[in-house]
Length: 559
Image (cartoon, rainbow, N blue to C red):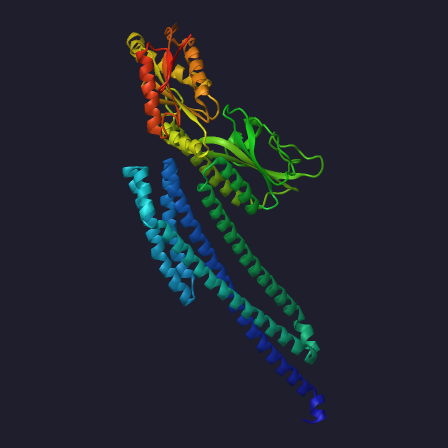
């Protein structure tokens, strides 16, 4: 091309127009590609949200079913049926949202798994309502639900991993589209300054919008990952709580779990005392920005008064609970979460964080508090059931079942350490006469009083038991025969001085006969020791009652 042609305005205009068309075409192509890539990113985020919703609903359904088995509350049963229906709808939405063929196939494989899991849970409720908790537990142990839960988690993770892989590829494509667009803009700038000045404002606006969408996409993906991590941590926390065997374990796991779920937030677990007029600190983690008192009254906490969570974004500007001490400098945000299950308030969790404003992790710690409430109630129920199974309801001391378990254990322990052990067998003298004179209520009053007397004569390691009827047993681990005889004499004297009131009158003088046997002199097994002590007790009865006889030895009469 001749220099004159190059300097021609027409040629320059045509060249500029050609460059403009080329740059414009390139920009349009890049923009369309960007829109397509952005749609894929948003589609992946939608699939991740549906995955999290399916996992959350499935865990809620199982938790509601288990809670109903433990508490028999109709509210939990209704929650299960409601969540069960939502699980099916959510799986259908997940299948409709997934566009990758491999992910679609995995989502369709997930659907029958969830339907089977919900069916097993529903059948468990039916068995529980028809045949009771033991039948439901037996069905759960053999129906393969645990393995099915693992399969569901694995299937959800495989779909999530597939989508995350697609998300990475789509984000890479999005970055390539951005680079192409930047290259097109950079080539057009030196060739057509006038054209760039004209379209500069539009390019700046479009670039800003593109960056905003990319940031929103990254923020959305980060938010979903954080939500997924929170749900996973919460699920592990709930599982650990349900596996606790003691209150100490439950409180330790609570402190650790809340520290993970809400880092930077300090907490204190307050549990009500038996008197239910004050609470005391059971567990604590972190350093409170606004410390709480050690023994608050129930009325000091707004969450206890209202039986619902209470938050105070700023203890200086808002209304804080009376158990919160306002810091000398700065401010703090607080939250109190009641620990309540089966209509019974057990305490509350107090949380605090420096600065003002709501606690960001409030929703997840609220769910964690609900899980802890259920676990705490379950543990207390287990403890009550165990006490009922090993305690005699009339006397308050251990029953024969506990005697058989503990005596065998103590004999093994003492024999291993080559230490003695004494067994005392008691029989209240003329108990039938008390029953005939005062009736069964009078006899029960006498048995209860004698049980209290035995407890008052025990060391912390001794084991008082009601053997049956008017017979009692006292196990003295690591006690010699001399100590056993001395204890028998003391109990004979205390029994003779015992006053048993019934219906305003005393039941009269009470005495007892005692048989004494010692390990290993009179036997090396629980059966042999009890038989020897019982034989000695029978001899004490024959020789006139109100005395203690040693197996194969002498008898000591009460003074």
